[in-house]
Length: 78
Image (cartoon, rainbow, N blue to C red; front, side, top):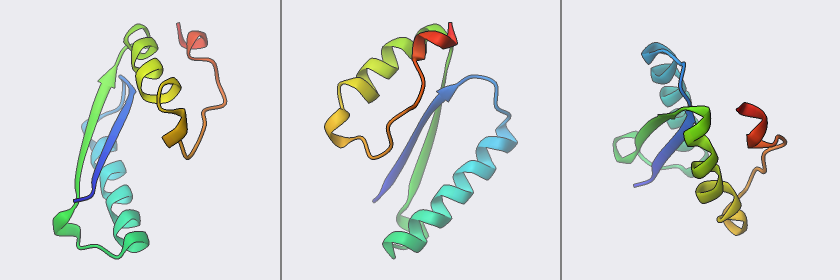
């Protein structure tokens, strides 16, 4: 443990996801001082329509746990 969970709009390649995962894992290991062997990472893709519900669940409803707030309206993605 720890686990990194990424949720984003569809459209990135597997190669982009691999690079992103590697960069985030590296940063997490550096910042937390944990072993890379203990880190896991998932990436989930969503359509703009699906993102509306995910945004509500993951951003709006978890505002007390949000360390970086978005600067856009998710409805603008539709």
